[in-house]
Length: 216
Ligand code: CDP
Ligand code: CDP
View 1 (spheres, rainbow, N blue to C red):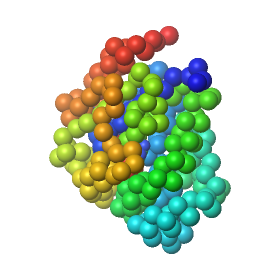
View 2: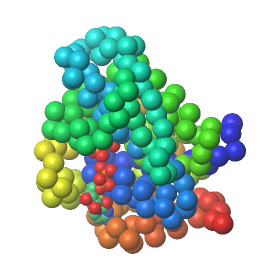
View 3: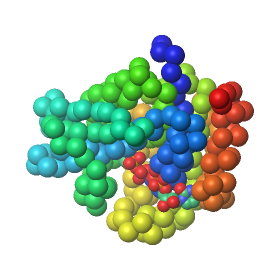
View 4: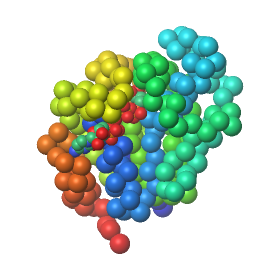
């Protein structure tokens, strides 16, 4: 076990995980790791290679050929596949539609969880996703499950101009066999539909302090 700390933020689509994780990383001086981008990146490559995302065997085979490189820049995680640094192309309608299928493939999860744990060897971090508190860092005492009303979450995506069937993704993410989305043991639930962004960050800092986080 390294001496670095991990804050685990999990929750359904558009609950406010990335926003909260980014602001916590700034407030606490930690690296922010967006694990969803890693699943999106593999999905992007699967689609680009013409592989059927619903064919788990073909996805696992395609994964073996991928050179996945994770990094940190300005305290934010970065991802490149086969030398291509990925960004906005990860949030297209096509990726939104297929990412839950690709994420349900056990080989994909095994590979990405390994890479996610690798970050902790060199930095303190806040990582957001679906299984960070349950699978990636189950032993961390710092765990928040972010939630928001289903209608509020769907509206947030529309307001951001994204085509994203959040309810379908949530259903698939919560019902899959490997690492389903659920509240981790020891996690505090934070409902962002009742908060502004600022008051949500304050509430999260209070939760973390109750969980024993010391600030310099
Ligand atoms: O930002 P949003 O909540 O819409 O999604 P995301 O965090 O970018 O994650 C995209 C998808 O990746 C999710 O719907 C899950 O299928 C998958 N994912 C996962 O399985 N495990 C994680 N730790 C993170 C994301
Ligand atoms: O990462 P995830 O998909 O869970 O959500 P996000 O991209 O961080 O947030 C979705 C939208 O909710 C963003 O446009 C935020 O500005 C907004 N929002 C929030 O994150 N927290 C609130 N308390 C209110 C709105």
